[in-house]
Length: 360
Image 1 (cartoon, one colour):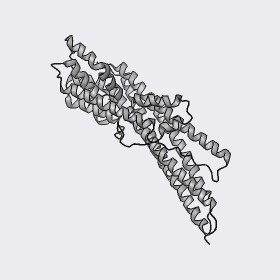
Image 2 (cartoon, rainbow, N blue to C red; image 1 turned 60 degrees about the vertical axis):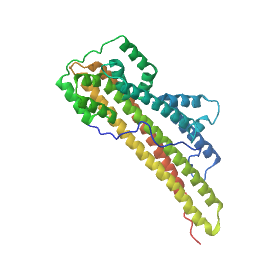
Image 3 (cartoon, one colour; image 1 turned 90 degrees about the horizontal axis):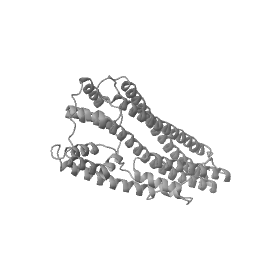
Image 4 (cartoon, rainbow, N blue to C red; image 1 turned 135 degrees about the vertical axis):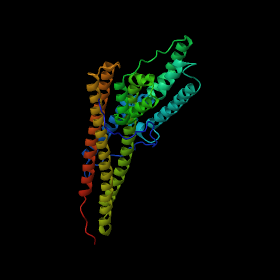
């Protein structure tokens, strides 16, 4: 029996914090030279573009993906920065996505409430299935899936009765309910175990497990997107404040020089602490993604030798795809941790470069 004992924190599907990015500049060694300033600005622009490209490629919300691509393709030189700024394109797209998701949830919940497995069996079962799905699955169901299910019910198309489920498969689902690779997978397995019929166990293997796996990675990607924007905004604000403090120190003379030097050092160190904390968060994300990739590798290895009536070849393929997705997330987290390590070191160096000025 495969046992995925990785414990994962619950990730929010719709993050509550509203975050963005200011157009601050990254720290350069003090005092900055003209050439260094150009390089720092180029580094910042490249990082922002990386962030928007990731949103365009990986964000689970089509509204965010579309808006991110528009920013990337724009001819305006500040389109990417404005997209990530407070009140910019990202926040607008996120709000649209939340509104659309709420509408879809309402339609699906009303469908469940107004149908039964006797009166409209296909509509009812597909609506329940969609209610636990990803944002994309819910959107597809509202756009086309509901009508398709209604048409099938109108033709009195029967639902095929599930075969008796093997005890080995029931034990497998019970194990996932306790030790599954992510919170959504565990929740899906727990529902199947609690309901307990052959149809519920069959539904888990055929639909719910796959959908829950996608929900886990969807939640992770949305969470790290918010984390990344929040950290960048805070760091850039502190970097601007530190540069201003250093300029004040450089322009000060006499008895006030020592105080100005201390204030500049403190400002740079504060920014460095934020960078170090952000690096630690990305290192935690590394561990989470690595554990998920390992867990899905174990699912794949189990599936290729399993012999019960489930579609194990299909499960093996899905496990391989999901494992690859988590391996990609691991690589992204590792790169972010590297970048924030570099930022923490550069910012701390700015603090130590300011000499201790003796008080007069």
